[in-house]
Image 1 (cartoon, rainbow, N blue to C red):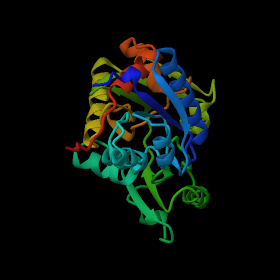
Image 2 (cartoon, rainbow, N blue to C red; image 1 turned 180 degrees about the horizontal axis):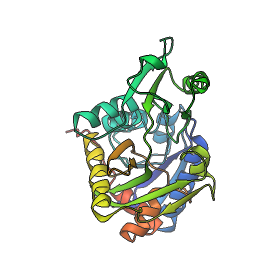
Image 3 (cartoon, rainbow, N blue to C red; image 1 turned 90 degrees about the horizontal axis):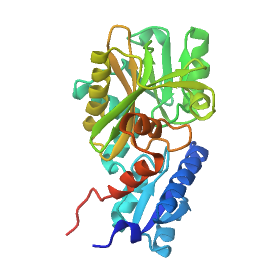
Amino acid sequence: MKNITSKKIAVLMGGLSAEREVSLKSGAAVHHALLAQGYNAVAIDVGRDLADVLKQEMIETAFIALHGRYGEDGCVQGLLELLQIPYTGSGVLASALAMHKLYSKQAFAASGILTAPFSCFRRGESLCLTDLPFGLPLVVKPVQEGSSVGVSIVKEEKQMAAAVDMAFLHDDEILVEQYIKGQEVQVGILNGRPIGAIEIVPKNEFYDFEAKYTDGMAEHIFPARLEPELYEKALETGLAAHRALGCKGYSRVDLLVTSAGDCYVLEVNTLPGMTALSLLPEIAAKGAGLSFEELVSGIIESASLSIKVN
């Protein structure tokens, strides 16, 4: 079998989602790391002609550095399965489940994993605060977006309409969740095991898009400031969420850990950021002693297809 270092690898980046600019940064970092280690890698800015480009470039393996829709949601994974090109990260179903906040929350609940109480609304449906099973404050978010795009915290009734309008700008379906006060903790999963938990202290009200991608807008504390038993519980919860969706390879699981010791799962990121400010590389370095290059190499070496064809 051909060694992966001699195979032609595509770093899929950019794409069509609201997270395009972040993906370009992730892809550039991954591409540079692969080239530095002697891999035969090319960077591909993903468009609707991706299938043609992959064939023209004679790509043999793909490192997916896309974020958001059409990249993190199973679409590109399905295309790669059809073309029989091994790829990094989770398969079609797990990617789609993780991207869809309603279905992922239902999967968490079915697996006994704690997640914030919620209600789901489609465009055109009436949304009245008095009909919700919980009160203010609450969180409004699109069902299928990442990087906190379109997310609002609503503390007063007068803020509700603007929050709903903002979420519907990004999706035809939105979630309204009970606000959970707790430490923002993110667990890194690599090769089927948790490698550490990092605490995020944002300068904004929550870990929003600006805090995630602007240097100095959030403090990263590793390991997360939790008592040993609670730290282990956070790691176990992260791994359980990863497994509940059928993820493989690697992921980053976002939690809220309350003062009562409860670990609420917010979401599983099947293609976490790989930028200079991204959390999985930081967790890998501090929790598993892996350099960025070693992390990237380990991920590409695990590239595979989910569907076996005889």
